[in-house]
Amino acid sequence: MDPELEAFVPFFPRTDLSDPAAARAGLAALAAAVPAPDTADLDVEDRTVPADPDVPVRIYRPRHADGGAVVWLHGGGFVMGDLDTEHPWAARIAAASNAVVISVGYRLAPEHPFPAAFDDAWAVLTWAAGHADRLGLDPERIAVGGHSAGGGIAAALALRARDRGGPAIRFQLLNQPGLDDRQESWSQRRFTDTPWFDRGKAATAWRHYLGGRPAGPYAAPARAADLTGLPPAYIATAELDPNRDEDIDYALRLLRAGVPVELHHWPGTFHGSQAILSAAVSQRQNAELAAALRRALAHPY
Image 1 (spheres, one colour):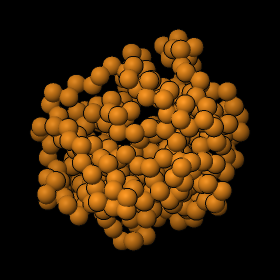
Image 2: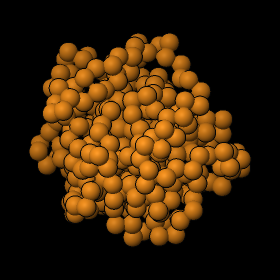
Image 3: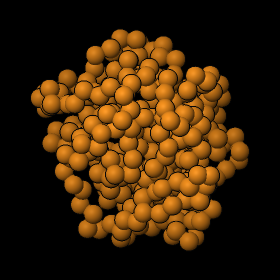
């Protein structure tokens, strides 16, 4: 493990996803302890996207934004997280990439199992594409992205958009995504005590999300048999992360399907460790994530 990250491991709170209320409170406290982002050059607006039910979003608009945007889905094992806990990361991505970030406050499991979060994200994507002119967005330069569970939802959005012939998605920005409920990879089987996120937490997260129903590709994108025709992707993996091998496999499958992919594996890191902002490797991870989005949304394509 990277020594700068290892020094923080003893201070990480123990999160038990079997107690969603306590887990959510713990994540909120952790997010509140992260240094506040600089929003001086951002216009930040809370809005509600009409749907059934309506979906809260927080829009981060850089002062010099040129129309590129990303529909961004927070992490939290499908159980935790909201617009406030994601604020430090959404703001940083917007400021560093110069893209408009539409952060989605999707419904959480187990109270709202699949497809609730997926449907919320889809509602926001179709709203953003359908109201691009009013929002000051280029409908041809809208990406989807997310971290962990949110990365899996983002990958699922790309699948549905392909299957339905739109909305057009320019790019997938997938950071340590949760893609496969089967947990059959080497890293899922072996990483039973890794910091912050391990096999047991992944199993609990999937159990809450699926609510006892069988998983299909829109719940677990790794189950998709056909990955052709999907938008280009940037996939980031952490070495000590149960999701690592399913993410690498998904990147390889995308490549074999003719989809352009940039795969960046970060040695010595663990799931979510980019939140430790003082570590040099975290600074590089966060900068590269924003840079990948900036490159992908550059105009023209």
